Image (cartoon, rainbow, N blue to C red; front, side, top):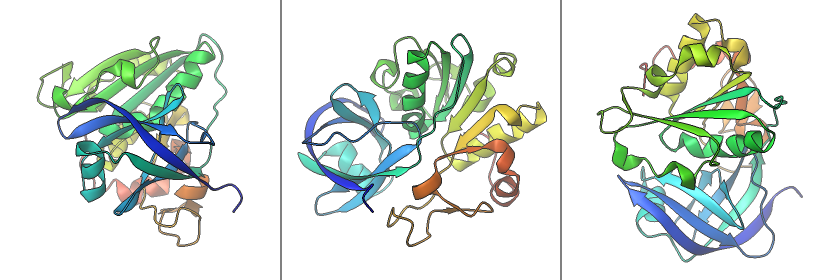
Length: 264
């Protein structure tokens, strides 16, 4: 229990808002929660609820990229509270060993980019080349990449309606010849997108290089309730997640991807 701490937050800025999504900055008051790949927190909205969110590095602030999907995220997008809080950390830090000069390819669907952003920052600091593919429905849902990614990361946008970047799904936009030369391929986003990239990587013989950032319903966040158990693995997302090697997810893929439509 000692690993969990509560940190009060003060609203600092809303650098971007558009298409029912927003980038919101909060200043931690006191202890600064660590921002690492694979680590997330319960974000407490006073008088409403808490949301499992992964912060993005932003200097002395904590940055959050959210899309309105329910009352909590709608409040955070449209009227961020002046005071909030974080409980955590939850999940497990993911620190892949990537050699300087190697290539990391990241594939994000929507706000899944927030889960991948800390990985991009740590890789760039280690001298790794980073290329990020980001898929959204329309360009109005895509914040400026400089708000969420290091400047040295390549950014490639895909939109379903063709309003910006490549037209189509983010998985279709991936340069798979480039991905074949990557030391690591990581993906985060809606389940249907993860299923699509899992199938494509499997077809191309790239599962050994693929990791997926999975999502699950996180309630207690401390491993008691079991709601965030990842199918087939015996793993709890709040304790062990969120990145899982694709090679360990064959049973998950059979259970979850059989009924998930391809693409995002």
